[in-house]
Every structure is written in structure tokens, then in C-alpha cells.
Image: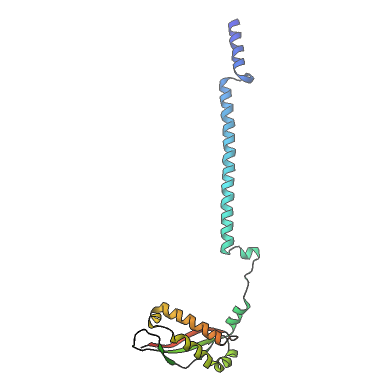
Amino acid sequence: MADEEDDQDEDEQDAPGGLDDDEDEEGEEGESRGGGKKKLILILLAVMLVLLSLIGVGLFFTGILDPLLGIEEEVDPDAEHVAVKGTVFFKLEDFTLNLSTDVNKTRFFKVGLTLVLLDEIGLARVEALAPRIQGNVINYLRELKPKELAGSAGYFRLRQNVLLRVRAAVAPTVITDVLFSTSLVQ
């Protein structure tokens, strides 16, 4: 009996707090499982927070949240003015000129221009300044080479440059576009 009591005393000393080995292992696993669940919940919350933030930023930049946030687009008063007012067309006389070439062969360019005005108020000014417009455009066109007129890109650049010169000639009047009614390179 004394031996049995000594054995029990040794077992109690080996296990801290008087717990058996089986009970000690279950306690550690329970704590690690509980800690693992807490970490998993925190990770899931962090992932959900990041996803919600990304969705919110995406909705904000696409403009879907603008009505909800009370953000209104700025309306350009000139854009409203353009929508209300009609466009007016003014056709310049067709003119023929020589193109700049390196070869002795002469190349002719016949062009007819139509100007698109914002309103009828500027029409009288454009009619009065028509010789100045033609002079600016002819001076530019005489320096062109036939290869600069080749293709759609050439005509796009030509249209942009002619539009700049026309706008400079009739400065306060708004010219919105230049249309080529005729264009012939011979």
C-alpha cells in the first residue's frame, strides 16, 4: 500500500496542477483550436473589408455612386449653348492653286471649303472677312506637296491646319468645323 501511495504522489508531482496527462493534452488542443478559430475569423474579416473597399472604390470611379453621394456633373454653359443653337454653313468660292513640287511637272489642287459656324450672328463677319480667310488658306496650301495630301491621315492633317488658319482669320467668331466640298489633285 505504501508503494501505491508513493506512486500516486509521484504522478501528481509530474503533472502540474494535479492533472493527468490525458487531461493536459485535451486542454492544449482546446486552447489551440480556440486560438485558430479567432485567427481565422480575423483573417476573414480583413479579407471582407478589403473586398468591400475595392468594390466601393470601383463604384465611386465608375460614377454609380454619384447620385447617392449628391455629386452633380458640372455642366458647361457653352455646351448647352451649342445644343440649343443650330449650325450655320458658309461656302467659300472654289479655288485652284499650284502645289509645291521638286519636279518640273506642275501639280494643281482644286479645293472648295464650307465653314460651319456656331450661330448666324457670326455669318456677317465671316462674309466680310472671306478674302482674308481665302488668303490665309491659299498661302498654307501652296506650300503643300502632293504626297502630303495622300491618304486619310493627310486629309485629316490638312483639315486641322486649315481650321486653325480660318479661326485665326475670324478670331472672335466661333468656327466649329471646316468641310471639304470639293478636293481634286491633278
